[in-house]
Length: 389
Image (cartoon, rainbow, N blue to C red; front, top):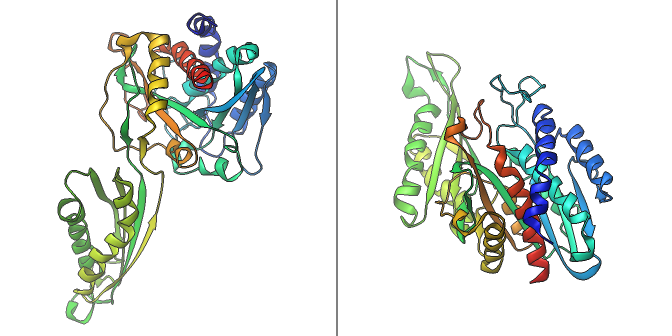
């Protein structure tokens, strides 16, 4: 099978799908019509489709004519609550909703891969599963597919993301830490109200909250090993009801970004140990609630990384492979990697000559569509190389 030629033959189909999906975006967990479109396209190819009760998205299964392992290829399907800049012929038709991250590209590339794989079952040793995942933008929703058994029997999973910081024609697959966790914490501080003219009669939750924010910064600067990247950010601080009343309540909400799995798991207790004594010094108490979001994304299966690099080289040439620094953004593909071995990478889509320079989640975000068929080819080549390994 000449995957490179077959992928090029699917270029117009992939772009056509991308334009349809881009103009009909749907928000996370609301991807009803998107799921219907994907299912209809897969069924036209003779691909068996599985849906799941209570969630959107679906899984397509392509069984090869020869026995072997099972590999899963992943695309995410949700859009963002962003109003798109006008100008494209395929602009969003849903006001306030936009594919501003490239998930329409991932879905289209994987549909292109489905066309190739479904037409060449006689050359497939094993089974290829295609997961079209809802709600990547809002946390650990990939977990819903794990709970419903979508990964049962899967030996390895592969994913990639269109990436605006990487030039078109370049691609990145490398070992080690790639993206951080994205956890959320909420700290509720309880004090005692009094009139602002007699502050000594109250216990000021706002003052205690301010001190807590300062204390939280000692976690990355003094408690964490400086060789471990860590971000602790308080993004919301709410408290008080009137300018002349000492607040008896305050609430801090923030995020933790980390790569070290062990230290990340200790963060709820670390935050409590730092915050509780500080607010107590102001006569207040604190409740800490910690939500574990997507875990760190770490390519720690070297064999899969090498298969991915080989697939990219076959599709785009060895010189297309470039290094890319790890990022403190998050990606819930990591949740799948807690269940089965996996590998994740980035397909460049930036083209300054074409004016395609906007970052992800920007109203002007777009991609160089010349790279999309390469994504299709990499999906296919990875599946074949893994199953034949």
